[in-house]
Length: 304
Image (cartoon, rainbow, N blue to C red; front, side, top):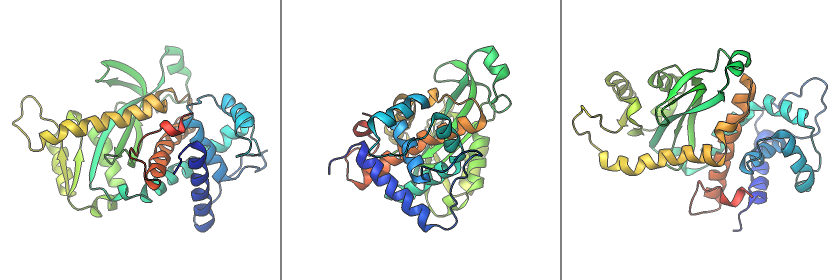
C-alpha cells in the first residue's frame, strides 16, 4: 500500500470521527466565546497531527499552508486565533487519542517497557523566567546528558520498544525522577496488573533500592545499567541494544517533531503542544503498523 501524509490523515480522521460518534462519554470540545464551530473536532485533531509531522511550528504559517496546499482536505479554514483556542480546548481529546490509538495496536500488550525523562525547555533569558505565565510550574533543572542547566519541565515517557506511548507526564524539573514515575504508576495501577512479568528498562538515573523494591511489589522487574560500585546485574547484554531504542525515541520527538521548540508560553499552551507531538508520533506508529510498514516509527513518508 502506498503510504503518505494524505493516507495517514484520511485514516486518522475516519478513526477519530467514528470514535467520537460512537462513544457517548466523549463530548465535543467546547468552542470559546465568540466563535462558531465550523471545523469538527476530528478535523481539528487531524490538522494538529499534520502540522507536527510537517514540522511547521508557527501556527500562522500553518494556517497559510493549509489554505494554499490542503484546501481539498480541509475546505473550511480557521483563523490563527481560532485554531489556537480550539486546539488548547482540545487538549483532553489529544490525550485521549494518544491512548486510543495505542490500544488499537498489538504494541499495547507488550510486557517490555522503556522509561526515560527528557528536558522540555520553556525559556532561557532571565526576563522570560520572571514574566512567563509558566513560572511556578516550570523551574530550573539539570540535564546530565548535555551537562547544562535549563528552565522548564521534564517529560516522562513510558513506552514500548517500538516507541508507542503507554504513560506520559510533564513534571517540575526539580522533582525527583523516581518520585514522578511512582506517581504515574499509582495513577493507573491496572496497567501493571494486566501485564504479569512486566520488565521496565531504564538508565542509571532510576537506580535506588527503595524504588526497585516498590516496583517489585507491583510485579515489575527493573532492568538498568550497573553503577560503578555495584556487582554485575543480570540482563546487561540486553541493555546495550535497548538503550539505543530509548535514545532513538527521544530523537524522534526532539529531532523530527521539534519537542524542545514547542513555543508554548502558558500551562495550556505547553501541555497542548507536547500532547500534539506525542499524538503525531503515536499516529505515525499506528498507521505504519496497520499498513504493514517495516519500520513502525519512521516519519519519512509523512514529513513532506
